[in-house]
Length: 358
Image (cartoon, rainbow, N blue to C red; front, side, top):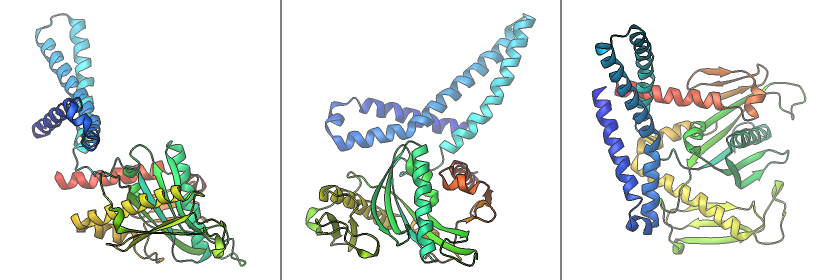
């Protein structure tokens, strides 16, 4: 615990230094530096607050122990002993919380996200399942008071999505949603099935931290921007104006498009957001090949045999195969009640990381 305490004192000192920097006129004038400094301070705030509470408990323990050594009054001694026992019981919880807080932190946890859902194996039923997942994440975001915004979509003929790309904006979105990357499998009787047989279909979900302008700079000269008419299911034209945008980043060959807004300017802004996010992903892949490999193995090809979670309609259950957690109330889950599953994934991830440093 001594090493932990020293590490936490270092973090508190760094936090105090950052607070001073935020009052420095030179930092305030430089928007990028001010933003980075503010984020660094915010990232430490919860840990420092918990550490200060922990230090107060240690001080109270010390005060009560000294009181027990010097006090003669029986009633005061009894009260001090009772309070000391309660304080010592508290320390264990704080120590575990602080250990978790000191785990290597994902620098993207505070970012907003871009979520890409694509129909996998299963034809039209896979497209309908992709729409179901989109609604699930939208309802969860609504419950969390986050904002969702569709960037691009390719509807299917029966009301599903062959592909839908959307952003989620709010507090620490990526820290929760990042565990959703992978292949999701559904087992149910499709509305397209006349004989009532259960089918298995899949959809892939990719969750990317949204890049900010301070993360990735894009040279306008590296972009080719094309405009076209928006299209609906089956390729039919739904707009006679050239409001849809396709942006090609010439050096990398990345292509993104957006046609969800009636305004060409808004579509361009959304497309640039996706482009910046995908470019950040490429940069992070270069820096950490292992993380890239993990993500590729999660998302895979969309084949039925690859899955992170199964949604079983006949048995009214959801099973996450990474942590062997099964929950009931499938309809509630698909209506956005996914917090218990996400917390299970977070705890599992933290436990595995603690094992590596123990």
